[in-house]
Image (cartoon, rainbow, N blue to C red; front, side, top):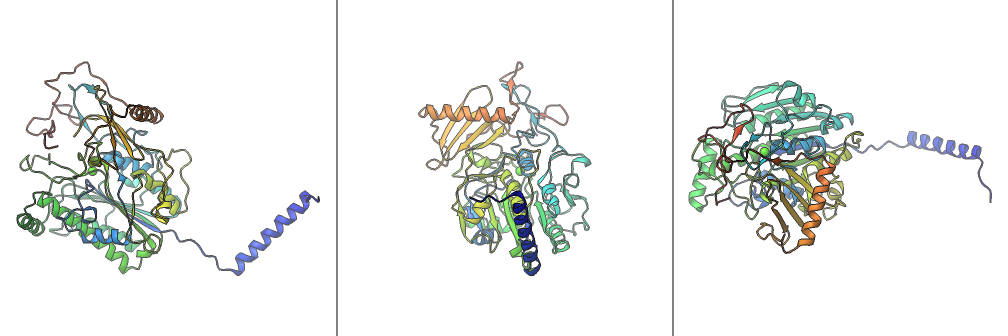
Length: 501
Ligand SMILES: [Ca+2]
């Protein structure tokens, strides 16, 4: 047998290099185009709040059109049950328990409850390599429009976290009530509803960056309370409620969802006009589940907002209604129209997905808990190899402090309020989480509880501790993190939940 000497091996390699170089000279280089990424991240929109997820009251033609042209996920989850935790997971690619943003910033304080809940981190740390920073490193122009909720000081805003352009908007939805900070080149027109203004800023950004790959995150405040929508739309849904006899969703809330749909329509129209639709991945989702009962004490406290039935619970709960949310991906030519994925997926999956599509690199010194959705984009019936999804919400809000794990068909919720309560559900046969199987399936319960505990240790999850000042009578008192004082009972957010929950 003749073995090539190292010299021949070098010559061989050299001639291959020459051949490749010549081939490159004679053949035009076909570069895989980096797709634009437009992420529409709605606030508090529930799984059942839009037409393509089964709502037959609210009119959402543009969002439904996205689903008809793209891939709709039926088992997609928000990483958290409230705003800031999910936003933290989205920006970092990690479960938020690693960073410690486990409650909405600044959170609440219940000093006389059974357990003392951990402090939440008040801002996304600046050393976090955000999704915007990773995409920027791959040559993307990056833009942010809307609500941020990952830190209050100027040093924690999106322009310090990788967004070249940022317009942070705060305040309620109605004209004259909200304000814009950052680099916006325009101010709202007189009488302009907030989502219409947010759409204007996005249209400007897309026009400005139409000739380069861009990542634009639109994070409207819609459809978060306080409820507020333009009169014409509200009247339309009040009439519709009378005609249909439906009391949910609330007509103002329905109108807010339609405003959001109009905003999506404006953006799709812009992509079409600029001939960018086929170059752009559009992602439509929400940061947590929908709200059942309003607690903004602006109108009657008994006003209901929406229902996520058949899902149990709402925003702030680790039952499905609090975390299962819509996700639609559209990319004509890359994603088959009208497809559906039942695969369990979660917000922090966007990070590795976007980086893979951008042909970029994941950060070297940052754990990425997300899993790329690219196999599902290629084939909607694909399965991911991930073993389980996890949630950690150690706070009193619309429910008790809890963690949860979903392993394929099974979900376990463990309450962290000192009661030791555990719930086990088989989701395919009981999407409403109505039958707790924890006593019946002791082996599986113990196994999932052990896995959940191991995971919490892996991510150094902060845990509640027993409260020596526990006082059952005063437990419902709700104190402000901002003032350090109790919130007067007439302003206190609702608690305990009523039987309607
Ligand atoms: Ca939210």
